[in-house]
Image (cartoon, rainbow, N blue to C red):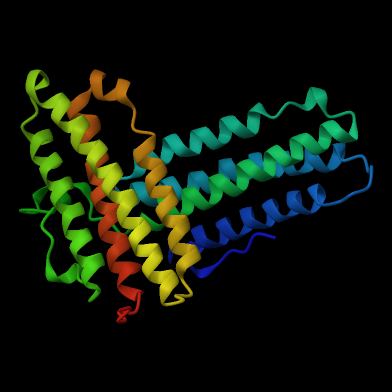
Length: 276
């Protein structure tokens, strides 16, 4: 069964309750998949698909309206992720679910998709709702990429690696602001690759430290790390070529915002212990 845990909460009551409902739908599908008999699932599948479709229309509308009200800079990204969810639900093929084995195949597909999408969307995007400054204030900050004492966890290795992540993002940010297609494209791609590699190494070091001290929040941290890495791995090269400055600026705002939120609200909870 899939549990709606505290690390999945955004702190926004309506959004959290609607997320909890999606977890309930996920567990209903999981229960059907776990049944060994040859029961005809046709009506169950139709009912769950209808509920998912209703959820998409109602919950996403509420979430987007809230983000629009607070001028959340991630609204455009959220809309695209919501559209992807709707398209996936609509793509489930009812024409091949007459036989129990075909029904079970669709149910397995639904469970895998829902579990992956739900955890990655909430931990990679929804937890940032209301956490980032409105776009106008964000852009007015003198140096949002500066690593300050506010971000220190007291764990020397983690702090040192966080500072390096800020340095890489800051360097990429400066290149984007002074973007020149003829000279900066290759440099930015190189920096993004460096960021991806360094982030993966950092997350590994951080998880090894948490495992060593038997930190109870390790599982939630791993899910959040996976969501961030997935974002880096799905950078659209075609979009960079077609609309480089705007795409890259929004990407860097997301990456920096996620990093700041993750450090302040998650990493600073990790106990600083001597592991020598």
